[in-house]
Structures are given as C-alpha cells and as structure tokens.
Length: 304
Length: 306
Image (cartoon, rainbow over all chains, first blue to last red; front, top):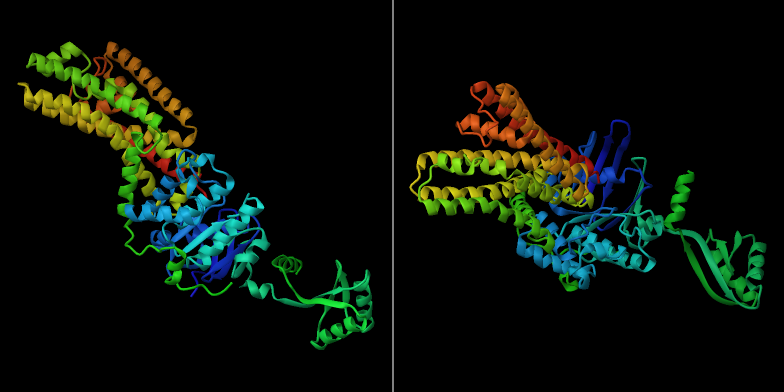
C-alpha cells in the first residue's frame, strides 16, 4: 500500500489546467518526483496537504482523503518548501520547537524531539543563533528539521539541494537517504538534478504538464543497456587495435575515451571479446556493463 | 535501495519516533493563542521588542494611579466632581478615548509582529502545512491581539474602579459606568486589532505599516473631532454622529454612550438618542470589525501560495 495515490486527479485554475487526470502512486521509501517548473508539482503538494480541492478525481494520502481529513493528514505529513521560509530573528531551536507544537506535539515532547532532530540534521552547535545569520546549507537543514520534527509518516521535500555547494549537497542527500531508509519516514523529493535522485530514490515519478509521464523503480530505469565497456592494458593504440579486431568479427564497436564500447546481443560475444584480447596479447583490465543514467532515460522520453 | 525497514528497528540509529498522543487542533490553537499573546508584549522575542509594549502598558496606568491617589486622599469624590476636576474623564470610557495615541502606537507596533512577519519571511506556508486551518490561524492571532489591547485598557480601569468602590462613592453609578466602559473597550480592542492587522498585511515592512496605522487613525480622529466641533456649534447632532463613524474611537464612544446612557468623553460630542442611532452605531462598529477581518483573511490566504 503506497503512501499517496491519485486517480484521474484534475485541478483547473480559471485559465490553466495544472493537473490533468493524473494517476500516480507514491510507494513507501524514497520517491523522486521529477518535472520542470510549471509541471504541476506545487499544485500536487497543495492537493496532498488538503489546501486545494481538486476539480475532479480522487486522492488518498496515508489512506485518508485530504478533502475531509486535511488536519489529520497535515499532522502526519511534513513539508519542506523550496523557497526560503525562516524568520531571521529567531533561533533554530525556538523555531523548530514552535513548529513542533503547531503540529500538535505536547510541549515536553516538542522540546525533546527538537533537540533530537536538530542533532540528526547536524545543527547542534548553531541552534541558539538567529537564523538570519545562517549559511544556505544551515538554512536547508533547519527547514528539513521543521519538516520532520513532528515525526511524520510522509515528508514532502521540494528541491532540498537547491543552492547548495557540492559538499553540502552530498550531505543533504545523505540526510534524505537516512530519513527515508533508516528513520522509516516515507519521502517524496523533487529535484531537477536527475543524478541526485538516482542516488537516493527507490522510485521515480515523472510529471509533465500535469500528467504522469512515467513511474517506475529507479533500478528499472537505470537497467543494463546491453553494452559493455572493455578496458585493456598494452602499448599505445592497444584499444584501437582491439576495436579493429572486434569490428572485423562483425560486432558493433565504438571508442569511448581510451576504452572500447561493444554492443553485446549474445553472451557468446563476451567470450569472443576475451579471445580477441588474448590473441592481441593485451592485458584485460575489465569488462563492465554499462547502465543507463536517468538523464539518458529522460532524454529518450522527451524525443519520443 | 533496499526495502524500507520497519519503523521498529530504528532505535539502533538514534531516531526515536513519537509514540505519545497528538493534541487536538483546539489545543494547538490554545498554544498559538498563548504564544501570540506573549509576543504582543515582547515575551519570547528580542530584548528591545519588550520596551515599547511595556512602556505603553506602564504609561496607561499613570492616569488611573493618579486618580486613585486623589480619590484615596479626598475619600469622597463623585463621578461628577471627578469630571469637574479632570474634565475629559467624566466617564470610564473617556479613559481609552483620551489615551488613544498610546493605544494606537501599541497596536500599530504589535500587529505586524503577528500578521506581517510570517508573510515577510514566508513562514506562513509552514503554518499552512500544519493542522490548524488558515482561518483559525488568523482568527486566533486576532483574538490574542485583541486580548492584549483590552488588557492594557482594562487593567487601569479596574484599578480606578476598585479604588472608587472601596471609597464611599455611589457604587451603582460607578459599576454601571465601569461595565459599560469594559464592553466599549472590548469592541474598541476588536476594531483596532482587525484594522491594524489588515493594514500590516498590505506592507510587510513593520515600520511602514506602523507609521501608516498611526497616521490614518490620528488624522481621521482629528478630522472627526473638528467636524463634531462644527456640528456641535451649529446644533446639528446628526452630522456629528455620522462623522463619528469615520474613526473607531469616536464610533465606539457613540456606541457606548447611546447603548448605556453614558456621558461622552468630549463636550463636543452629543449623545445619540433613539433606537435608530443606536442601531447605526452598532452597525458601524460591526463594520469596523468585520470588514478589516475579512480583508485580513483574504490577504493572508492570498499572500501564501506555496
């Protein structure tokens, strides 16, 4: 049973149709939601939180209907917006604690969970400083902390890595991974960097102009392509000699850097590659399967 | 990329899920009310934000304490002789009327804290993603600001009244005037909160909205007073009553005076007589509360698209 399910969900604004009979399931675990700006991600989040009534179709969040159980759903869902939302003159400890109380936690539990959560996101030292002086990385952590402080069962993260430098981005992804896979909180995370989602998401959902373009497990999308990459050791030009030898045998071969890429349609071709290397008296370093990246998948999708 | 582990095993990693009972939205609303009320007096905020609310609260007490001191000294002083001594304070409702500059500064300074700050930092979105409904959120904060304004009026009034009835003064007359003034103060607190709350959502710059509120209330008060003066001189009461509607302080003064047969805080104002004028002032005061509240609700909802 997934955490979110929509059936033919349509949301129409006076002039635009933001969601167009969207049918999508978000399973437990970490789900990447991909879509360009204006694809309908924000509208979907509003509907899921029960803040916007759909024009037609049905939605279920954690087994409840947002139209009627909005408050109950918002108790069990965390939300980290894409934009800045932290008051500059308050420190993180007070702010996160207040947000915990606003989510319905009793004071004592709110205080305890605030210090726990700030430690988990790595804001232990700075938590008593006004948030106006925080770096972008610290602000993102504080935003994440307020989204999980009330121990939600589902957390919606909107571009959590926006504006972060590579190191801070890695740390944020690690945090999201921990939340989704160790804390047992289901995560729906949006990002425009597919490479990021590939690292942490179990599932990927692609939305375009309010419609579902594709939904599948990340591993399905990044499945083996059938190509292999062969790396050999030998005198200069060794890779070209190998490539030529394989071409002579009628295989599809192309150079890729100093390695040779080969399309394999039949497992016996792998033996042929090995034999060709031996015949040329070269050292075989490795034969590696090539996997699709999400990026490639979506480029193909767009062409189609 | 393995399957999600059950929520039970996460203790090993130091994450503790919340297992207690979550509070009802009503309880959460009470928490929000408490926090908002504390914020009105700078509690739980930076040190310097405590200065203004407490300074005004203290200044509001001064006339009451002076009056109380005189009453204790003279032991006996009817409302009429108090009026002769202190002109304007011929009625309890004269208290908020003649301290309107202080009240205006207080409410203009505190309304942006409750209504504009979250719009400015867009924190409002985080509230919207939480159980309390958008309408509840605004109304609870409005209630907190109203309570704060009412408190800084009612506390000195109560001191004055307590001293008065513990002296040998006509108890009935004082009690009636006191209760009428309390009702008036509550209505006044509501109008001031709704009005300043609304203004503060139009500009999220605190200083600007505070200045705007002070200027609007003071100018309209000045205009109303001069029209009332002219109307009084020419004996045209109706003009005075209609003019009173243009400012919350004079509108509420008209309401209290008409409904409870109280003297007016200023000589230039005439007491509205008849059901018609009473209904007029009820409608005007209602409009001063409801219209700004609706605009405030609409502004807050609109400003906070996710």
